[in-house]
Length: 522
Image 1 (cartoon, rainbow, N blue to C red):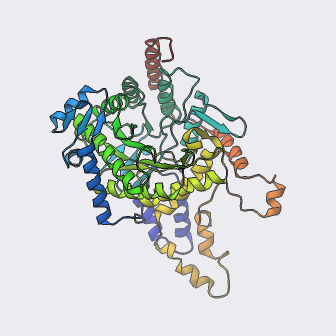
Image 2 (image 1 turned 60 degrees about the horizontal axis):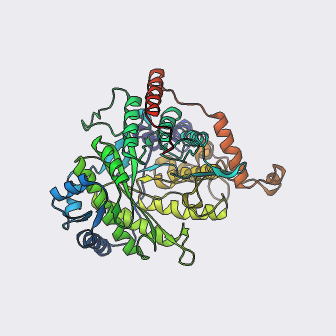
Image 3 (image 1 turned 90 degrees about the vertical axis):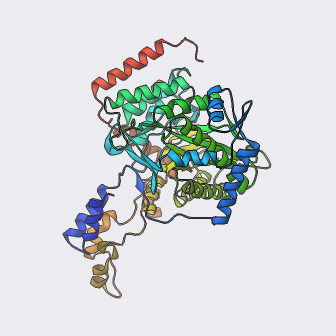
């Protein structure tokens, strides 16, 4: 909601035209480009605890070190910066990584969309919801579980585009395994540009694929690629760079990071950690290791291009100590999330984590409560970029159609939670209380009539009817209602406008790049 809309609400009165106008304005702001929170952050550690974790992270960097594998350029840059380089192991003087980041990395930045009204602010009090990422399988009630295809990828881009609760098109929403590995990134990036005008993520599976992503983004944006505020190239892409935990960056991730950082495109440096296997079993130990790995990656981006936007990422879940299988929605990862969000604010960079994570194989009660147990801490902690908001099943192995629209519904609810308590004159409702008085009801009063359409969040999926009506309508459960909703959304989908010349240029670029590859899939 912008200031003009907020002013409308503040000036509105309990009944009459002003309240009706306020309700209409609020309804019109349901689809917002990103969230600006109005509630406090939830903290689980005080100053002493946070300082201890920061000191432990510096000890890891100085005494244990981080491996930068198969990248002589990275090792040379670190040596020139004052680090101790022995083979591929880099030991960092205390405070080096933090000082590099705080000297030049922006506290928040704009990721531009090809539709300027969809551009997002990443960092500060803002929250951006993006779909899940990386699943090789999809699941729905019609097909069950199967390998994902490019048609599924396009479908999820469309579903993210029409979802009011999601602000971002995401990245590798699912892996289209029907396309060759060395060419599929072109079709994925094209799908984000063609079927949505929300911001999107780039390919990181090889440096040349990152270069292709940048080239296609430049085509989509035309000549308008300089940020008028910063004077630097517009940040059109944000991409996920995973540390190979514990304490390792490999050549693939480093290569993609360098491409994006040099072009002033944002990188999310995220240790992917399953605690107990890739980090210690404790919250404090996992937090210290996560901070150390992220500091090294973000600082390296600043060595490549001082001022390049970076996002401090944390993906930390736990494993079953009995089976070794990943678990989600449990309390320990939520505590890690709260701690890492606080550490990111202290460092002064945007933070990425969270989502609607679960281990369930289908969109059932386990999926719902595990996802809620991840998404609510995400919002309370103050995560700026929320990857895996919608669609995640089976520990990330599957992208669920029904789960996607269920999660998008939950994301919509979080908009209301993060907006906090409206204290406008209309919201105080004193005229309504005076009108109704003791012993009556508010259903017919002027204030209720003026505000009823926007009074509460309305789920498109939840069934609140009587038992008899529910039974008469087929006694469907949530998954069946979600199945009908995603099909309707795809049937009603209308593509955003895309200039014909840009579309032709993108297709020409892809054709030339595909022709340059060998026939092999690898």
